[in-house]
Length: 109
Length: 109
Image 1: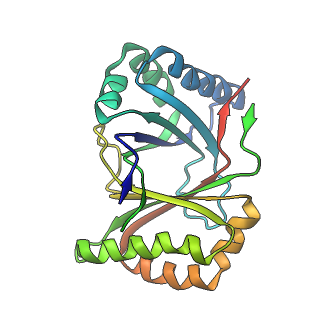
Image 2 (image 1 turned 90 degrees about the vertical axis):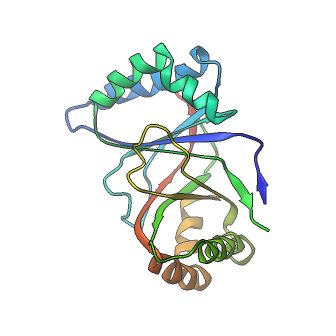
Image 3 (image 1 turned 180 degrees about the horizontal axis):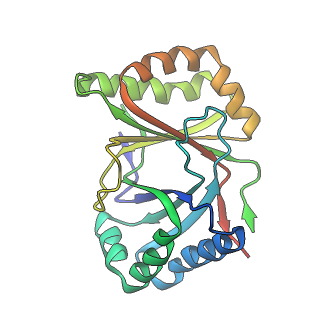
């Protein structure tokens, strides 16, 4: 079993509210990406919109994935004032949210 | 905006049924990982269990992420007999499933 050493992926699925404009969504994504520069344990960030063809995305429109060096790093991020401020704003624009953290394993022997 | 050239991430969240044993789950994950060797457009695979602390994982227990070179590659994978056979078995062991495909974007300028 190969497990990336301590790395934790923090996956957020969101469905934006109808009234949240695409310009506002763009601003929120920029602010989310900017957390990498503000919160030391947050090592990287990427995001995307659903392009699935199986219709099993349960209404979620966007995904955001950030990477941390450890579960302690995620905890530090969650409690960090810059994250708390951002999360309060971000969540106010979401109808639905799902958060899943995991340590990626590439193979199982 | 940096978008990985055509790459598509195929994310599956699952909640296994109570009666599915951990040995059975291990077998299913091995079979899932093995699809990389059987289906050409499937380029990589990793998985993990939820370790989140925010209690927003909505009961999902496992995540599986595979990578494709294009949305056409995902469509080829979905229709591939090896995937169809595996998916029928896999889904029979799940209480819940969510599938989200996206083209990862790392920055937005």
